[in-house]
Image 1 (spheres, rainbow, N blue to C red):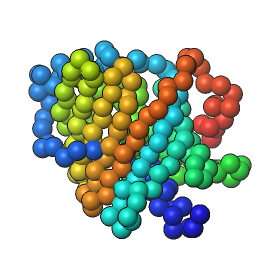
Image 2: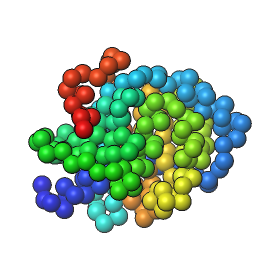
Image 3: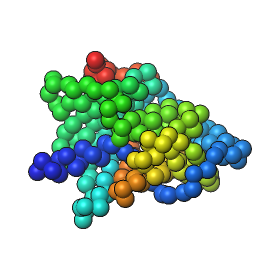
Image 4: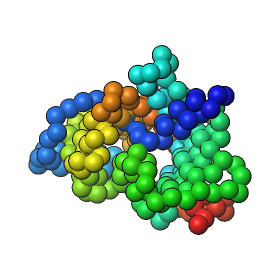
Length: 213
């Protein structure tokens, strides 16, 4: 794989998800719908799921696709494990990002220095923790619930994040199934979650190593 393609693939990690809607404050109806979504989602201290992510960039004729696994632990953060077309791993917490590529060379930087990843963390951690109150601190939310599933559209409250992301669309049923992000510059990213693994309430020894300092 050429260096420019590998760099482009890694940019997939800068943001996740979706459709453009007006920036609306939360209403009583929205609050009720978010409560219904929270009731449908299965809140677990540890979540394991496969993913496929497609990064659509205006300068490229085809999307850049990566596949891998995600491990979320409420007490630690998110392990973002890309397996194809190359291997790279990130451990994301609310304050830092640690990156490595299968070697012992781990690079740790403040999350504040990676605004794209900071946006990702502000979406995924409360979403996987089923903490919609925290999600509403960072985003205006418009939600819709049907018998078949649910959809929520987020727009950033923070001016800095709004310079990067136009809107985020999330949909699912008893699990989060799809996340899409549309950026200010016209690029967009679609993230599909695959099989959720049967989970225990504890990380394995290997998974704990993802979050080692």
